[in-house]
Length: 246
Ligand SMILES: NC(=O)c1ccc[n+]([C@@H]2O[C@H](COP(=O)([O-])OP(=O)(O)OC[C@H]3O[C@@H](n4cnc5c(N)ncnc54)[C@H](OP(=O)(O)O)[C@@H]3O)[C@@H](O)[C@H]2O)c1
Image 1: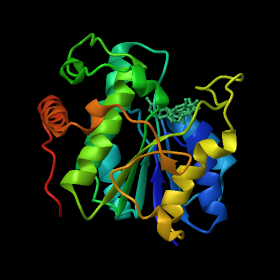
Image 2 (image 1 turned 45 degrees about the horizontal axis):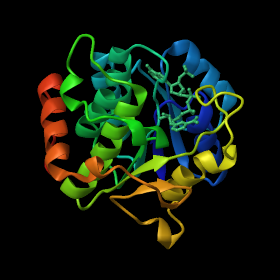
Image 3 (image 1 turned 90 degrees about the horizontal axis):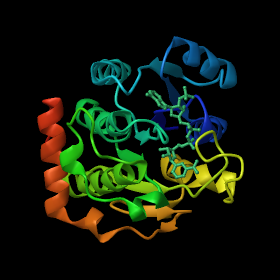
């Protein structure tokens, strides 16, 4: 049985992955943006081991979330799933990039990290230097390029921690919309497969996965100089340096 923490698990792919992992007997901790949503999450998945609360748009709340998660212990897997789509660019920068950076740095190092990226990253532009601005020039696609790059950077810098990015496909959730064409079940199957860990083939790291296979990742995301610049920028903005491997 593994212990798993999933951000943004009150809805959509986060909640679906949590449900599957609970069914398989794992200890799953959920995460909600506020107390009301935490109540909804508890009702939807009463067998969850717990629900942590933090608005990831608030970096101080994200720091407190890391402390609360650390008080529970060290997770086997953390799935950085929460994200926002059609909202203003400062929210996109904080929720989609800076909060997963902070949680990665401040939480006890798990055995495995999973970051939800998107095929939209394909048309994303490299905007790491925008992250700290009041009104950053950053689209959802840009943020998903950065988070895929960060997932690969973590895999490179922490060889003892498996770290992968996932494109779940365009699937019909609140974010994907009702006309999304891809298979909803496949949208969370890769995260579940990695976190469940029973299949030896799931022991991969440093990959960008689409439906359990290698997806098409922009070359920029693999550029180690860009990865280092992204980490330096996030460290400067948050005041939290990227830690060495424990
Ligand atoms: N659906 C797709 O077609 C698609 C395609 C490619 C990639 N993805 C990626 O897959 C992941 C999951 O997407 P989804 O489709 O399941 O999205 P979703 O249905 O919109 O769910 C997003 C989750 O994140 C939470 N969240 C959003 N902002 C938050 C904040 N400020 N603080 C705390 N929690 C917050 C939401 O909470 P509330 O329930 O309270 O809103 C919800 O639990 C995302 O990273 C997304 O970018 C999705």
